[in-house]
Amino acid sequence: MILDYMAENPDRIFKASGIAQSLPEVSLSTIYRNLARMEKAGVVQIVGADDNNELQYRYTGPGQCEEKMHLVCKECGKFFHLEGPALKVLQLSVQRSGFELDQQQSVLLGRCSGCSRRRHG
Image 1 (spheres, rainbow, N blue to C red):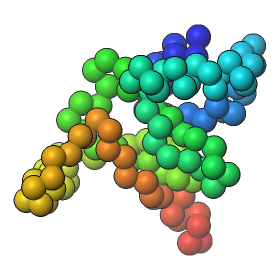
Image 2 (image 1 turned 120 degrees about the vertical axis):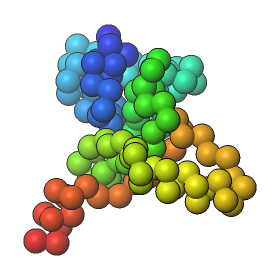
Image 3 (image 1 turned 30 degrees about the horizontal axis):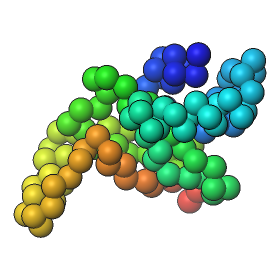
């Protein structure tokens, strides 16, 4: 049930508390247990924590986000793909440093344009 919910919303970032609100029939302890198992199995990935230190997850099931970098808004949790020319520039910069990047596990945190506008008025 939890995995199905996450798979139906692959471009979202999830917190256990948010899943509990969306799936009230599932207890919070069950959600935490399942998230831990799914993370260990590689089906979900921890992408960070919010300001209250609650872990944030994203669905990484089959065929999701290959060859893309991920941008996550720390405020609203929106999830974006960095692709095209911007991704190529980043890949070249990383490659020149001799570092090999695992793009499926790479997440850049920041603020989306909407949250930036609200924050700076």
